[in-house]
Image (cartoon, rainbow, N blue to C red):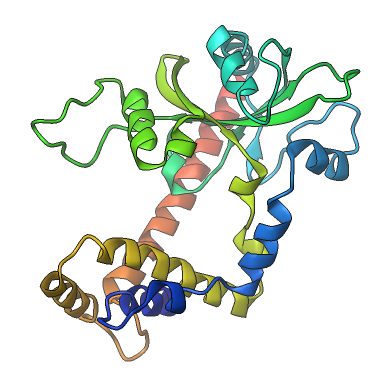
Length: 283
């Protein structure tokens, strides 16, 4: 997958690279995208969850939270701002009842490592109403900014507000369904997840499909980077990417090493998190 990723990324800097011709969506992504275009949380929940009251299935990705955490999350989604955020999509009634059904800690990759992140399941409207719907909120602690900011730019001091402001400029459709909040003394941002946001998972793919998707997605990112460079910079960047290759791996050695180290750090940190959580439960 790393070799395919580098192949797709590097090709994006070729002088004759044509985005509409050379970046073709793999069949696996096309089919899943087609299915997701008409999906809703209500149809997904009714098809996959047999309980009368839908819940978030605990397991490898979703972990139980404390009563105090759930109580604070429940209070948060009783506020006017969060109710408005939950009802703003899919032509929901502004005054529809918003009920918290379940919440869980969400193990979601390295971006949430060591930080709070929750999946929150809501029901919009009363179940006796025909037009009720489900809604999943992604509640995530905002990290300290790693990148420097330009001196002439005004940047929100609150980290969550910074993330939301950036999203509104980068992707207005995403940014408008986000909000900055405070929870458990942490600066966090919340957004509604759509079924289309979760349309593909690597576990769904075969080995060959995963390699094809890696090449495709890397080409998309590479083209986005290429647009921001002049011809001389693109050529130099491509040369830099082709350095430090070994005979056994057609990808930079630093990329392989950094990913292996990151995976090891990720697993070690979450095991430590589990140990601390177990100790707290025993108290």
